[in-house]
Image 1: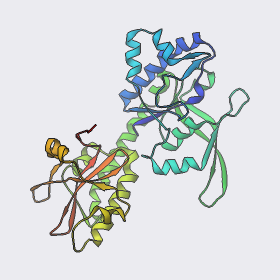
Image 2: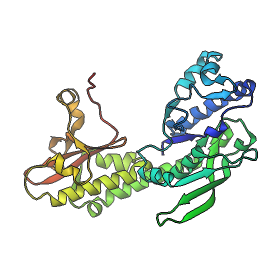
Image 3: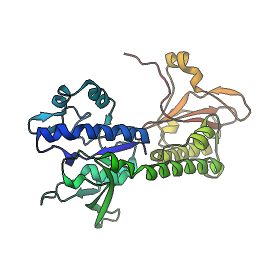
Image 4: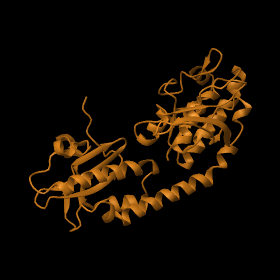
Length: 321
């Protein structure tokens, strides 16, 4: 998991003085989180795509705070990558669970919705806060109430805990946990490669896929997507006995497939050439799109075999205005 979540309930501070005192700590946490491997800070959609307009004290926003800050602080803040919403389409299972859930926590005798804390819980990742309340002075926020509707229509309520940081000391306590998650992610990738013929008997995984799975490891958030799309492509390959490969038929199996523009192939075609098991290189132009992932494959028209040569982030393309 390379994302972490902002706790929207931690804003604003009571006074501008408190905001100025603690915001540098928040930036430091984000910097250290990035060193651990957390890349993008996901925000509540009510905040918007960035933190600049977020009120952090009465009549005082982060943009105003930055105007009062040193240049090095401004530069550090600009390096914080933010995205919205809290749970994007890259996490379809967690998003579906979130749509059937409500999260609340008691603060000052009130129980507001705790969407950020809830998203961090569902995604099994870290939530970070401004140190604006004693409630956030902990490495694990407990007493979060999770109300959700099960698939059979039953209402369930339970108390959950969320890994959390508002100080560098809190973040340090999570380092071992995050390293363990990375090791587990790599092991799952290696297991997927070893059992590829069992899981996807009608596909041939080759090219860069072995390295991507066994050496680099696929980020844990992508496992369900990878298995789902490879199963769909495997089903297409199983039924492809004659005729030519077509994107239209692939769409019937739930696959969003496209090729590359002439300009992209001319400039970046080499990135899309991968070796088949016979060591011959072919152009794997066709690719499946799903969230941040791309699956590049080569459909051999003669043998009716589908080779998958790349599973990973978006390769370079020529952008047209």
